Length: 433
Image 1 (cartoon, rainbow, N blue to C red):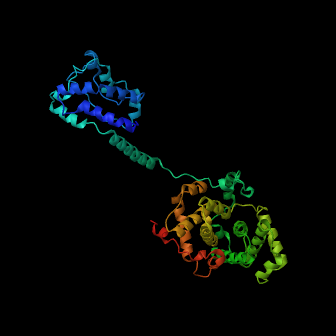
Image 2 (image 1 turned 135 degrees about the horizontal axis):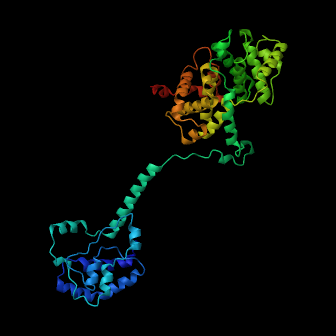
Image 3 (image 1 turned 90 degrees about the vertical axis):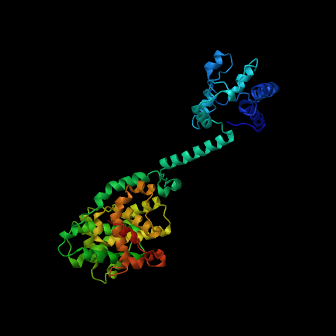
């Protein structure tokens, strides 16, 4: 309720007239006669403003034709902050100023001060003392603000951000179809996975030989300056081929070269020639052997070269994480470490990509971070990623040691932002129960 400054002096007079304890019965009647005009001015100034809600005994007023009894005292209560506006609008109870204006005489008016009070009335009077309206207003505003803050804390939930809105005008981002594309990738990724124990079916090669081959191919990929998609598809073709075809040890390198050749034909604009592949193998194979292996691999895979690899998922998840260049390089460093490790085949490509991004965030920021936006677009909770993330951190710890250091050397250059020099997120391993 807003009250203008020009009405405040008149209200103070009204307060003194209603409850002033310094006046006797005789003098009080005189004071009212003297200020009757002021009371009329007050009613005019208020106009259509609703009266202040008061508790008045209606029955006593009606029976005595406007004269209040001594038993039911007028009680002015503090308004409820929540129901204040409703009560102000619906209240039909007359205020003291309206009652006084309608009276033809004030001779019968009795001062409440002279009424004897019981102990209960004294306690009630202390509780019901009127509080200045300015204090009531400020206290009500503070209470409402505090309650609003508590309610906001209770109902606050981190929103899921629209990561494709900024690409609405970029035709290459296909923002209108991107959700459908990744739904299809999720559906098809199971067909591109291999059994995590397929190497046991091979009689002449083992998981250590596979690790050596992929570590070497990562270096070859780097020397040829090929696209990232080519590397991930190369590894996928190798695993899918070895899961169906037995290979002797001396032909394993040839399998790797042909897989890279096929991946280049699928992903690259400029494809390395067969002679280049023979040269980097130190002429261990002939042109005829390369072409025969290419024919065998295509027939074994039934010419199915399109498979969702961790690359397509990591790019999407990095966008959901609102990554910068540093986080992107670190994520690719960690996921390429996973390509070398045979035990990571037990995870689907999307899961491995999400775990790599999560581990990269923990490594870069020094604390666990997995937003609702990341959770929404990856469909993986933070707790689900902890096991794979701990494995990735352990790979990061030993990346510079041993014989298989191709990934570390690649990402320890200025071209890749020295991502390999980042300290591993040891605290993730420390939280393991």
